[in-house]
Image 1 (tube, rainbow, N blue to C red):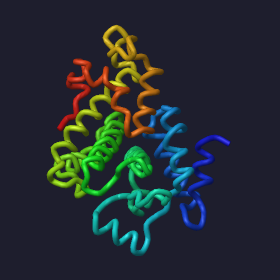
Image 2: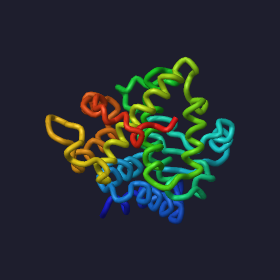
Image 3: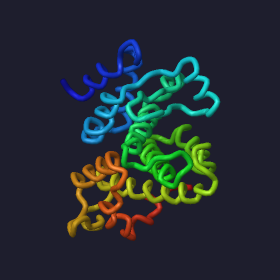
Image 4: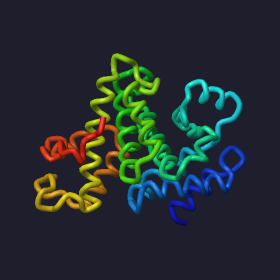
Length: 242
């Protein structure tokens, strides 16, 4: 059974999604990954196969409405809760949202040091939004991308004011790193001008491995040091527009 089928089987059922809803989420994930099989089948499908999904109703829906958020991952071992409205989003917007929530699975590890209003939460949110932003930016300009700008400017109600600058700086940093990686993957960065990783020019296979590593592991900065220090990362095509 392939990863997509396991995903659909896992997220459907009495406490989960309908077959139609699960199919819509699968198509969204496949759309936003644009053929990146390692990221799709190696990260996001397995995450939801384990953690599951459900649509918010009752008190859950009231809580999402009060916070004006599309989804939440409430606790370790719990299902990711989706606002019903997200099922009407365009596939790329829904898929990018599902990736954002999947990245939050990293912070619920017992060793993650997670806590609301903390510096580490700021980092988790910045990284999750950076990937969500990049996945959308690889496609057509959309309302979803514009809405992310509001979150970037304010913290979206999730970031304490004292950490807002850090949130923005880390979002910018990881946006540019991921855009460099996708520049290599998409063939927009020639081999002779690509950053060096472990002493060798970055090639698409290695770039894909690094995107997957970013999505899987919250303590990964050392793996990206050469890209963080690469002067080409400051080029306009890689920089966060905000």
